[in-house]
Image (cartoon, rainbow, N blue to C red; front, side, top):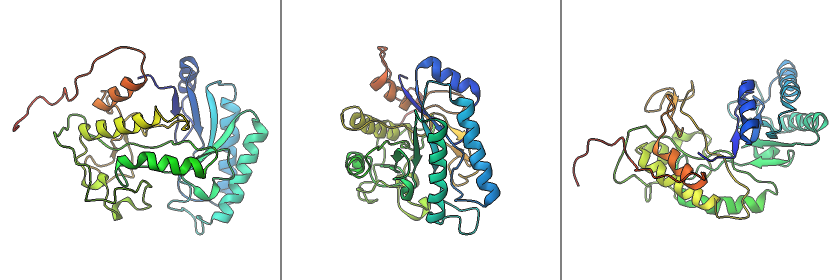
Amino acid sequence: MGANFVRLAHYPQDPEVYKACDELGLIVWDELPWCRGGIGNKVWQENTTGMLKEIINQNYNHPSIVFWSLGNEMYWLPDFKDGDNTVKMNEYLQSLNDLAHEMDPSRVTAIRKYYEGAGIVDVFSPSIWSGWYSGSYKSYQKAIDQYKAQYKHFIHTEYGGSSHLGRHTENPVTGEGAIKADGWEEAIVQTDVANIAQIGDWSENYMVDLFDWHLRISETDSTFIGNAQWAFKDFGTPLRPENDIPYINQKGLVDRNNNPKDTFYVFKSYWSDEPFVWIESHTWTERQGA
């Protein structure tokens, strides 16, 4: 596909993954499993700190790793009472940041979508879901321009939306007039606000339009370091009972059987050095109407 950056989330991967990233020359964002849940008790903190030590010790010699990510959406859905207390969270996040720099002074630390801790780590990714959980994808440039000014070391590590392999439409819904088009931040409770995730058709065609828009901007903005689409492959999850296929996150560029969706080739058209032609909607074999 031509990618040069991969975000591994939200847990340590199999050693073969890191080995492959080294061999392919990829830039890697390696992530601690502090994903949602808030801050826990003393035992929780000892366990999480221990995991960070293990991750760095195990993966230190992989040249592909550039980012040690210390968390993602950490204050969502706290598992413990007062677990979303940002003062306590920031004290603990600072301890993780200090530990990471002590164990590995050569690499940078990062987090995603925990705004209160953005000034603690080296690199920060806010939440921008233009055209899916909020607003229109046409608001993407506005979003990154705002965040470039707000965060000195800004990278964007989640965007995209869901699509079902083989689902097509001639006129994908844009949401114009039905949603607040200028928004881009993901709502805390996504089902409480009108968004494309709710009113959209989950077609391959819509996602082709969305990714083409995002990539056109990210590939031509010389002051924007880059982004990572979420996620490369459809996967099972206990958090998505409301999805069209329950408990399956369908934000992948390939389905669960590794069959590429049309969106895979949008990325390849921007990134790959290999000349190719792809006829969109090849899975749309039965059509009617105009």
